[in-house]
Image (cartoon, rainbow, N blue to C red; front, side):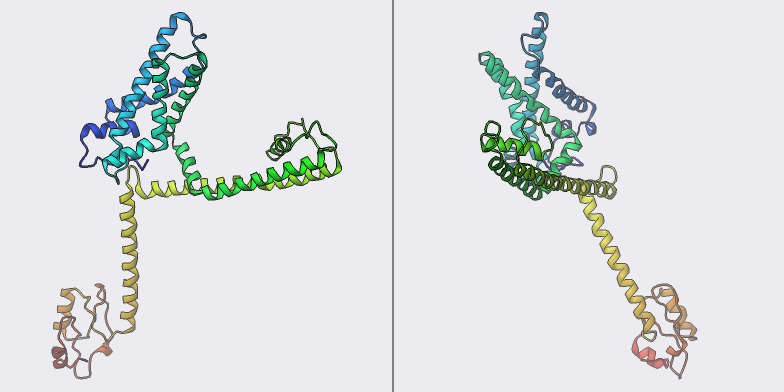
Length: 366
């Protein structure tokens, strides 16, 4: 999903906007929509307790209540799935309505929302034995994943995985390579001395996994000098190999937290991404303006004889009528130019609006 919209689009009706807020950001919605959104979160949590409850464990007088709660939950989740399809064009504003709805239905969260409904419908409508019913009950655990929409921490973890996926994949490939190589080497070193313990490469793989992950059950251990030397080298290498993913995750989380902090400081409360981009553009424009102004001031100070058009009209008129000391007003501050700017024939001021002919008639420098 994209970022939650800050304000209602013009094409969206008021009802559709409130449904969207109830599903994505309940605390910004109207009271009724907020109640529905918070109630949906509570319903997801309560359904987690139904997974571990079998029909035999429920007292006979409560079986009807549990069954009714399950049916009501399935109906609510079905309505939620339909509403999410309806407001998908708000969740994906850069797409057309049909493509946005198709995008949601094929997304991971869309499939999870569908799995929260379909197995329960099969559970209630299709007669089945105990084993399929237990399997359907376990599948309903996916309803807990729906909570990730409302947990910012899980969203941050997902963004870190997406941004650092290349480094994470490379780190786990190193771990897998170390594990496979360790299993083969340890099997070759210990199979002759312990044929019942290290009876295959898969057993060596089990030992390598428990050793590299520092679990160390102790049920398998090398007894030969070569095997113990290999175990020592493998454990030392495992320290560095396991530290690589930890460093990648740490760097990713630090970068994500800095991005979020910059995002909130740039927008303030309830700011939109467009406002941040406009603010950044305005800051760059202001910076360029002041840099150009400083360059102009330095040029003006180095060339006092050049008549710059930056004085207020009153200062220009006063300097022209005074005929005195040839003040050149720079940048609106009324700074006096040097007296040397006047020609020997007179002390007329250099006027910003004067033409070359008028300056020549006054005896000023052309």
